[in-house]
Length: 220
Image (tube, rainbow, N blue to C red; front, side, top):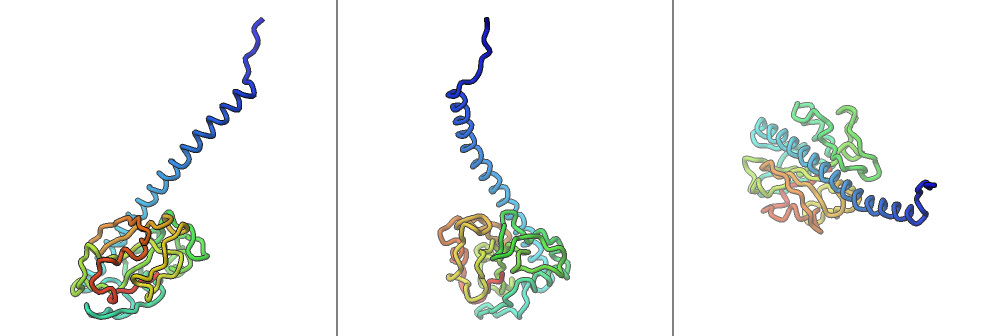
């Protein structure tokens, strides 16, 4: 008489162990691929914002978006602390009307606030989860001494405040809880290209090639 075949306890444990090993291999790989896709979408956000900001500069005789008067090429600059005012300015003038562009797909928290797309420009709050990026204000394309290829304009922000006096050389560290994780930062430069910095000091390295760092001011 034929007996029905069945898994023994040992065989069942072997199958479970193999499934566990496969999960241990596949899940991290899938998570890494997902983050790479989000990082790419973030870079596309920055490029789109860069096009809009350059269009603004074209219409305003070389002045990049700003709130306070821009400094001379050899001067120093202290911008308004809250980026929301500049975001409202470029929105109401028709340059950046898609508020989703301000949010990195990998960003989960901004300080203590959960990250989300603002419902409308009236409710936009850059320091309360509606903006994932730090803006480097102070450039004037017609008189800047900086090379556009190495002058940072927008980048992934840190959860710590990055305003003004922290720029550059004293920026808060990019940590595990920031947009793309520890020491990783997407950076848009004035010439429109985006670079992913993977550096132990990614927060400060973006400013290494500026001739006069005092002429710019970070705003988040």
